[in-house]
Amino acid sequence: MPRLAARAVTATVAQNLHAQARVALAGPFWQIAQGGFQDLSLRTGAFTYQGYRLQALSLAWRNGRIDLSSLVGGQLRVLRAGRLTLAVTLDQASLRADLAKGLQGALPSGAAGAPPTVAIAPGGITLDGSVTFLGLPVRYRIDGDLVLQRGGQVLAFQTRDFNDSVLHLPALPVLRMSTLPRIEGLPLHIASVRLLRGALALTLAGP
Image 1 (cartoon, rainbow, N blue to C red):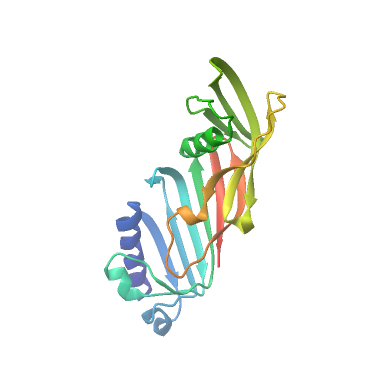
Image 2: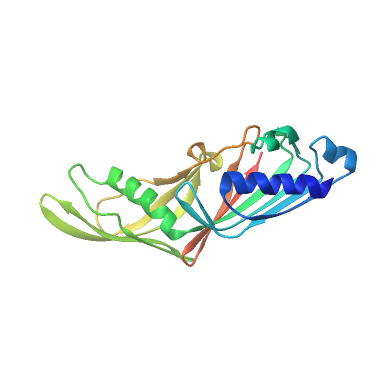
């Protein structure tokens, strides 16, 4: 029964995420037969989903319960959330469009420019680029960090410096939990964020 349930979860991940996963599930037979489990672990390699390049994904889930019948249709419906931790590593290229959109909205009216180059390192995030303002090209280099807002529902870029300018940018939203794929019955929030070289490590938790 644990192997059968694990294979069903693996098939659902492949159908919805287009990723190969390693799934392990543990619990008494009677519990698993009703969709429950004591422990469920899932790991994938790199894949692309909704424009985001994920280098890796791992899930540790305890004392949850899912609707086994929904897996037949390739869906995942949660009946009991239990406690889970989802670790995701995002490639820095995946954040370029989100940071560029936030930056453009924060610049003065009339300013325009191409998406910046994004570089992520353990010490912070750097945006390099140029904008045209009042007909003049202006180079910029913005250093900042990622901060959590609204109880982990929003991940934002907070600037530390803008060429020593008097222009102070507000925090720029990068990721919103409300716009990411959601699973029915499974509320998640961003619990922590860690900057790597060329990547971003997120830990999501629920409920």
